Length: 536
Image (cartoon, rainbow, N blue to C red; front, side):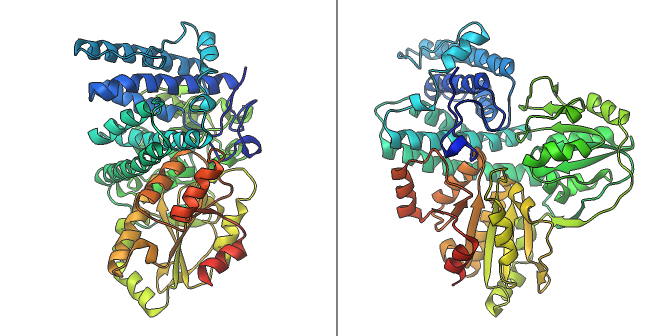
């Protein structure tokens, strides 16, 4: 069985995984995911012409998110999604035919095999390299597709909290349908990719409003890295609603809830930090889970992407929720976490062992609340430069660059950080400038919206464009959410971004030249060279 996947930064040999995914994805899962994406494109051909259908739009978002790196590794589950996709496509086809419109062609007439093995065989013909014969067009189609996947992840969280946007959902169907059109050229897909970045800004704003309306604006909050005496549950992922429901169901039961990875910023939200048993943060970024989880004496649950192949030492106390799935790992459907709670009560839990505290909660509301001090510090020369150092962390070599870069920055600079890339340096002591911490944790990857709002507000205060600010972006990437955030930054016209530790394998040389010429987007080099180029 063949597979080819190059959608994440760990693509084998910098080209693509063709035997088994570095993420742990088996060939049959990879081909089923390709098949699901093909099915979503078939569905989109009808949905784009039919107009909004809540069931179809919701499924499309969940289907795209399912194929993001480190989400669903369970073949039968993906096979079930393929079958449901076909059912929805037939529903849409019938509805469109009733309006007098019929579609033809291989994608429109897609029909999956009855059994899982047949779907896998079909999926081998639906991979990346079948999308277009032209390398550059294929490259931009991949950028668009990964942007759509990343945007779907953020939209899924927003939808869980009851938020949606018809214009965004219409664009998703239009863009998916467009990838099947052989008459579209390179610049058509460049335009769609930029449009994806525009719509993602809407989605990130939607999700930010959903979070802040539900849980309040984040406030600067110290987070305990040690432990409290008691039973324990560890929550990894991104979804705040799932964490809230677990906090409600464990209140008064002697169980402490710990966050892991991208759940760390949850501690800054008033509506979540009010729970006294939200005890602290355990461990670092997602790629260290296998060596860290063995030392967690409680139940562990993943609520979105970031799961790795679990070790036998903790697999029996591991749970998944939402779209996350791993073979032979118990899955929680819905909002009843009684099985997770029961498992935690069986296990020993932690002794009382306080540790270091780190700060989180510097969303745009908190930072802009002291904007006058920040502006005054810049005008006085106390703050010379801002650096946004953040993004996805990962296991590939070269990521110590970000630690070294942060450590070597002059004392008159401020670091904004977000996403799990911050775990490279967020336990270091950076001090402050006139009471303003030099390290400001803006939040999760989706909180890039907050970072953008901070940059726009500073530009307004100094009456200049964002590109004219003393602000540099040094970004790390791993998966598709990082791709769509980059598209959003490019849509906003932000230039001179440095990205690493390596460039995406799916960007062709000509497409890279286009990005360099139009946005001065470039790879990180060495800390010394990059710092000198920025600061002189």
